[in-house]
Image 1 (cartoon, rainbow, N blue to C red):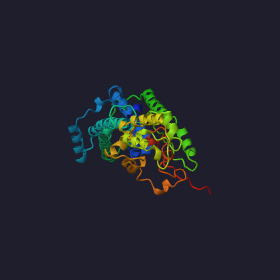
Image 2 (tube, rainbow, N blue to C red):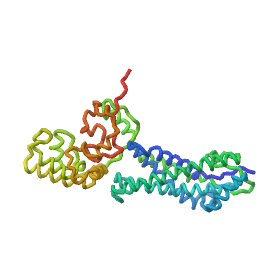
Image 3 (tube, helix red, strand yellow):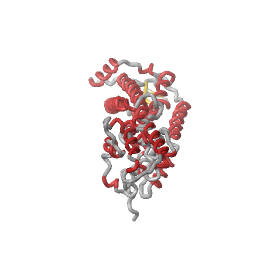
Image 4 (cartoon, rainbow, N blue to C red):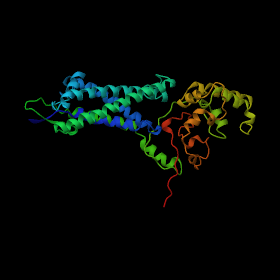
Length: 386
């Protein structure tokens, strides 16, 4: 037996970066405030898969798909031998492990592509922005969640039944071999080349992508410390920048003189028609709008109302309403009520909030009207200084 290099540097880097990106994407999949990180790991993963597909054709000897092109029946036969007490050795990937690799690559590609479509449909951002409508978001999200869950199960089986079990049976630390690249093999066995330059380029590309994605994360962290006087920084979250919505200086002047100039996309056109029709008794005040101003505001509001589905919030507000509902407050819409149902009553009483209409207390893009999930932060009272 002799010790040879089996796993070249690009293959090892891919393995650990792929595992890290999947773990990162899974751990950041539930909370809206981690959406930017979730998307980062997803884009990193699909880039890695693209590299692995190329490297599977042009890479080192044991990295090429041809070196472990075993069929499913060969994979089952290998497992039967292992169960029977036989310990077949393979320098590269064994038949069962090869099935896990192909499954993980296929499922990873499906999860990434469906995730891109979800981001494009629900957030109207990313590479798939504009490819699908908001209405497809739930269907795409179900596909994305299903493929990610199956991928998690395959990965767990690969680690527990493949790496751990076979390491124990063969008395080989397979995880360590994917770090060092070295394995024991019979004399005369073909060794792989290290391909250090390709590995360095791969690592540099991943690092450059991370730097590009998070280039303003530090500024975001510092901004959290000053955004509210008593808000405790929560760490570097990078909020997506929403699409630029239609704007009107007269709308901002008239509506913004008393409160936030809520974007028209937050209520249906029938609500704006009613509000402007009642402008002489606008929640206890008389707006005293002249006819020209009233007409300008009405045209802007109805032309950019929730039915236009300009943002995710607009789509979901419109969808939550019955055709006959005419809410005069955004806080009366079923979607707003459901979306804010898990906010503690004490949070509404914070000095930074005080009112449910003070959207800017939690939504950094409230003035822009986009209300991106990742741009939301509920202010927390900073602990008292000793």
